[in-house]
Length: 413
Image (cartoon, rainbow, N blue to C red):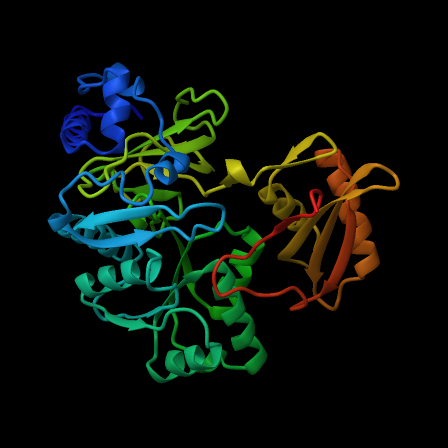
């Protein structure tokens, strides 16, 4: 998907704004001799940027407008280093709400709906984005935030919430609680808008079945507005990304080579009109592909396939590169094994070898020993790795109200 003439004009305008701002990227572009773009070839010569640059510019080195134009900041969690701080102008906040309302509309959500919002509020971009889009749409926002499952269920029943907004981890927890308490007939949910983390087909099917709802993947990240920059349509043929606000590329995560539509690689996003913190060719580390051709729904927005994982989620064991998504795929091949799992990586000092241990849940009708042996064979045949496998009962592993950590590396302990 080549960059269009209109998108090039917007990128050229962004570069000139950045150069005039004197921010972190203005120095990067000056040193690289970048003054603007007039062709796709010019555009592809612009260096990539990533989260490390944003941390180097902490706290507000990427701000491209005067302080008096900044109306809000958001931030990443900062769990793996300095947090990333993103300033927003009034236009940025409005543009984000417009995109989010568009997401709801694509999912068939209307002003008649009651939208139950469980993602977190505060510096994180989630809750407030879901709410702003909801209010712009004209629907009823129920801004619960995360946690207090007892209160969540009470409000969901009493207010007759029709749409659930959540991470897949929290949607799973709510589905399990509703199932356990026999509340299915008391809830009025029809749709779920799920984001923040990738999720397996098994988890998707369980949540949809137990809650009796249609599920929609919403996409976004803190650095690029937040969630709400793209969503599945009812035809479920990929996530439509709003190319009037963003230009999306897929690149080889190792070489940086731009890949043709249909090939899987790393998502790179350019913000076309963002004012507070414009980013050009930002490496998201999310892995997907641009789906070629037009969507059967008739919308012309380009489509991203399901997020397969993150390039920085990769871990190496016995010399083999592995991703959590590969583990999820194999777990889904064994009947009765659920989508919930944990990976522990360790080093056996006595035998001087690495160990991978996988703990997975299964329902009561499954023979745990047989399921474990079947999983070992699948890992050996498909990934040439033989893990230690432990099968446990459903609801044994901890549940999360936000994102669930899957991989625990103890090799450096």
